[in-house]
Length: 163
Image (cartoon, rainbow, N blue to C red; front, side, top):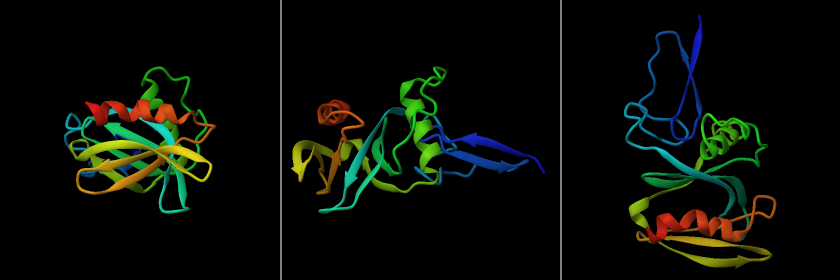
């Protein structure tokens, strides 16, 4: 029996389907609606860390779509697809990330309309930002030195926070 592979249009997770099997209604990793791909599109991605509490940092990828920001925990990725220009830079990071983390879990998922503000934060020797939501949630996000500078993270989040 032959298998075909489709990919999620947001996180690029490979969906292995048996012959004549249809796509599931939503992506098992990011929850994107697979039936209506025009509903949500990937805008950008950035590798960073999400810190829960005093410890428990998880490296992964912060995804920005036209509807939400979400973080999928995983491992630091190699530049697996960095030279492939057919998808664009943002998609290549997503492709490399999903290849590395497999069926990762979403650590947080914030609709764009729920984003309130970001503020600088320093924990131990790390510098980053706290993303605050209108519903009262807050998420500490850090940029490890090997990924870039804290300002890169602020620049990534600015369009979603300040419109």
